[in-house]
Length: 105
Image (cartoon, rainbow, N blue to C red; front, side, top):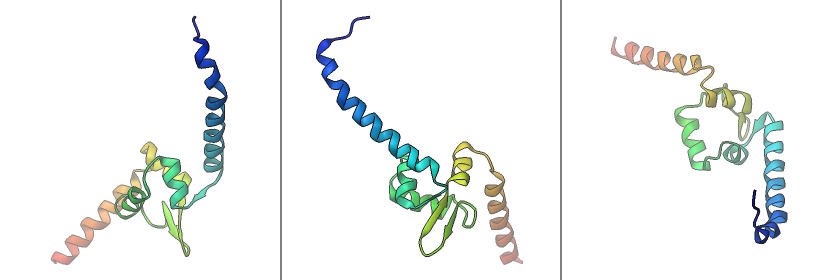
């Protein structure tokens, strides 16, 4: 295995960046309740995308809560990301269909 010596000088910079990434991940993954900025960093999405998901995919009082400001439940968001708990989405879809059917009657 050949390691170019000119790349060895980059090791301190790489270590510093890895340390910063590790600190950010530790702080985000240890907290259960995340604000929009923290969730944006945690998921790697823009804040605009987080607001869009809040309006389209996330369910109030399951994925997020309005307590003066928006707080997202990291545990429920993790389930959503992994596709676990899709029964919430099914319940939401069922509610929408029921509302439409009730309005037609």
